[in-house]
Image (tube, rainbow, N blue to C red):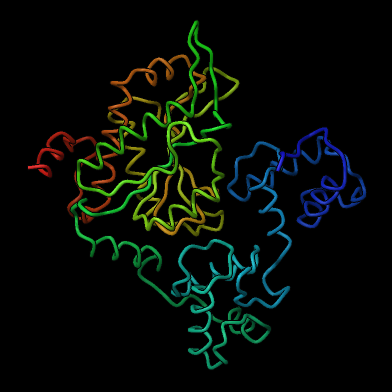
Length: 382
């Protein structure tokens, strides 16, 4: 869909404003207006910020799906597993988060009432003496509200995910990684003229991805890219997440470059799935931290830290997933580094080291910047 933004008018704007009024983000006395004005822009940005989306004030496909899901509050409707079109909404996410904190395995709190959520709810119902039908109605809601936390000694999802990694062993051989070069096709990302040259985010992201593919492939991993160098059309993040799930990835790394109207903005940032209520992909959070620290130490890029987001590429993937914005293409300082192939090799070395550290038991982890990736490749190819 074409993004709806400030200055637009029509029924779609009226619908957006109606949802924002229901969320107490916009004055309810002007619900009939169909003008995307300054107040609506501020309300959209506030909504995006609260949901971990890019706060650009535009209602694109991802923001619209989040707005549509936000209509529902837990308890307002009966939740059940529906095939082939599962129920989606903020009420589903709230239920998933509640079950997670009680120790039930719903996987990712992705706002989709799938079979895993239904099974987790049925298990809860059995344990409290209710009919275990996987349907969340008034009786189940009453039981959920009166019971407190069930698991102590650490976040349940962290314990579950870290144990799965521990059992998989430290070797990279045979593990599956999906590398996502951002943008592509009709979506070039940021495009920055530089004298007689023209630097395109999609091209540099693909170069980084292909270099990373070679390094991780040499280390024994099975590597898949979500696109080639010049696809006819760019896949939306929703389709990229579905592809990663179909490929059975153990990890996903999405590569982007950032941009900003202010050329002083620079540095690297890494993103993982997480919500404002504290629910997070625990191993995704760990991977983001490792990638961020390795890149900062090995390249000297400014540390813009790690951040939790609910972007669909991070929320809908079933494996630990991160997005890395490797510097600002609009920054003269960062751009001078990023267009240097040797610098991009250093970025790739940093990501390879972070991936290897993901599979070390935490008690056997090594200091940041200490893994010699050349020795790692030589040892695995020997």
